Length: 489
View 1: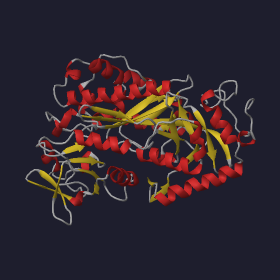
View 2: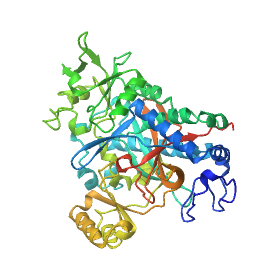
View 3: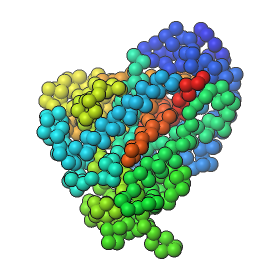
View 4: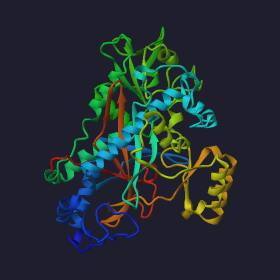
């Protein structure tokens, strides 16, 4: 680099076609990173190899893992953590925070409307077919008023910074958004490895998430309950996000339960304890809708609780997030988010959508089929980066296969331009050096009854393979600590 050049970063090559979060177009270090860059430049490659091993050991000793599902086996892995934090200045963060809060509120209004008057459909803003064809729309929720009027208590919004330096929303996650535990653990790991760097920056804390989550859960307690008994329900130890389930339960000081630990009697939910049954009032559920209650959904589900939906609809327990939120989690619904925001909030969207083509529309399907090599094809109901096809990485034969798949079920697919995700210096263990890697950002928003909270930080996910645009941990990605700076610098 031209300025601040040090041996630690001597092999770092900025790609002029990409937005580099550290270096500007003249190869100079951006002001917000200058102090951190100098501090990191004082360390040698061997120092970072040692610190990287220290961070990995910290994650291993804490049991910070996730599971990847392959064709024939399930692998448990340490969550890859990168030593170089991402920094977001106060002004930039204000836009992000206001934008994700706006989207979460609009989605909550949208869900209420879909399960009540359906005005947005009657007014021709969102087509009926889009909703009626969604596997995540639950007839059981029609006409039901969830406690506090809240459906998406917890939202995870995925953003990217494009080559124009602007943030764009990739998708909204409101079924069971995960990853917040890694945000907190990343901060802990970086403090253990390089505590001194925090003396030079005033960053917002991320360790207050659990207390705010518990506050949110308590605001949506059933009527007549003074001090609610809250629990976290998990599918069990073999779930990919089990570490997070256990972490959040412990951090909130509530019980972590499985379906077999609960039962329903007279439309009330009880937890089995050594001292006898204990009534449960609020359940933060990390189980998908179809497995919640074998009497309402999959009859062979061993993960849920028989009678849970009846207790919920009687108003005797609150489920967080509400069943049926997945209808608004659909990537096809995402294409209507600007209109949804304008319709319910009478505001212009603060954050931009990525231009998106929905293959159920004949004219857009035609465009997608003719331009697959320039597009990213995504299934509307998958998560974790599964099922994604990036056009410019496909062979001619693979393009033809994708075309046939999309033509067979157009409703199931959307397409987006291949966006140029920003890059960030990332420590690459095999090369023992810092190299540019693509990143995105997942933020976490909480909505309760007259309470809202956005975590001032987020999960910066990193595509660890060179040139890869898919950042999900299930696809080999890692993460960084994300610093949101305070105003009084």
